[in-house]
Length: 290
Ligand SMILES: [Cu+2]
Image 1: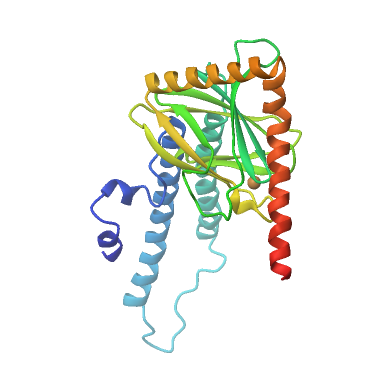
Image 2: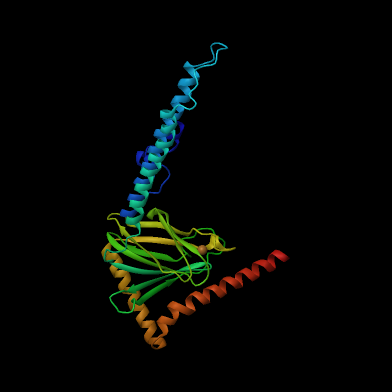
């Protein structure tokens, strides 16, 4: 009752059992797997607690005589074995079914983002996947490491996405293992050096708004600085934003000569920021020494 009162009137929040509000079709699936698993756990819990309480209340010690024993009772022993196997098989079935759905990247995507996770920030490369050879970078958003791990929407990189669209994510890391996590997606995936991890998210209609993103793998001493923003925009606003970014990127490319944009996206961006991160680290340790 206290729990009910404390979580307020949002019954929706209560039934989510601690999960964030889902903004993708995939997140809805994760949420129902989560809720279903809890229902199964509650059912088993209620049965076991019920048997305990029933035993305590109605089968207290009445005399010195030993009660009837059930050891080597084959039907009961078989039940103890078969029932857990049934429970685990049902949980396994739903987990395997949902995992196959969550990792499916067959559906043609509307937006294609390459996520580069590096110590200690993120780069989001918006790709033109209509081009051959795995696509071409249209424009990039490169973050700088958060100063001290305190979330600050104004200084963090923002991953901008359209609502009511299919987004394909390719995950790459030039250094160590990170994990790309948007809690509202109900999903995270490791970003592993030398491995092409990918997933897709079908972002729901009516989900425009601000969300948070994190690195969810302890990737080194400044892991907590790897924060980013997620902003979901209505389709038309997203299109306008993307066109603007693309125009800016091609202007910059013309100013710096051909090939400059690719260098910025794949080399200098990540390396430059990394060097900056190391610089900050050196200053910090000097301060600590003092
Ligand atoms: Cu990380």
